[in-house]
Length: 268
Image 1 (cartoon, rainbow, N blue to C red):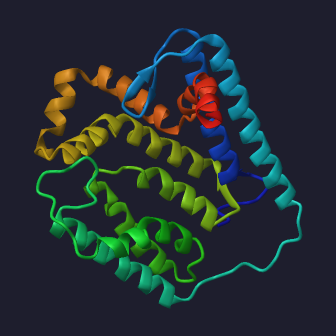
Image 2 (spheres, rainbow, N blue to C red):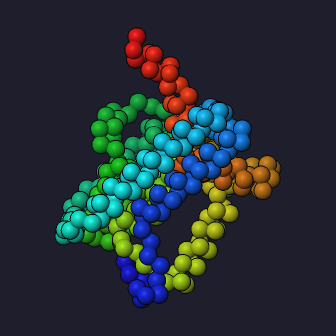
Image 3 (cartoon, helix red, strand yellow):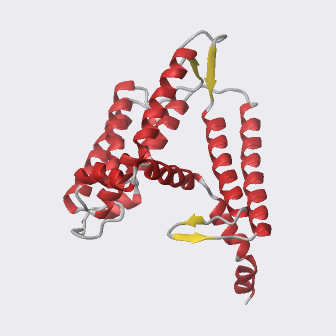
């Protein structure tokens, strides 16, 4: 997707953006750990000593740079003709996604964190064997029809009603991959900055809606709940929560910390 003169446009590479995002999220967690702060690993809030923290960060940095090296090698390979998928694929994914949404709403399943009111679905094995979210992410990039791509994307974003907000992060990356190389003029960069700023400022309310859905509570309470805690406090908590969702540091540091125990368990 070329949106301007190539000499006056900013090129956006999804690989570079993701590498930067993961690197700085883990760097933030590393500095938090070495300063005695707690790192959230699933439901646990853990602290790590400096040696384990340094070892974990070195392992993560090495992994990211190794993946970057593989990407650069692949980029140097001769370009082959792009693969596209016909409308049959688009309609198939759309129907499958709609059936998944209907199944989730009717049986009360696949809603993150909700256990009350869940009924056994006779179609569970189908959606376990072929995950609709993964199917969409793999197929959508290659769809020839832009109309079916956008319709499928809108249905995919219905994942928010299941208490999962990851789609709002994955869709921008998906767009960058589908229309790569993306080049944006300054005015479009400013517009995107404005949009993302609004989303960032609204993030405490969006995250609160997600938690209300997961708890089965009334979603109309999202505004009053955020304001009751204080908007500034909620924005800070939400920012830390979002950063934490991108960090792998806590998991690697936990493995480093428990490495001797794991080695001993395997040797017995």
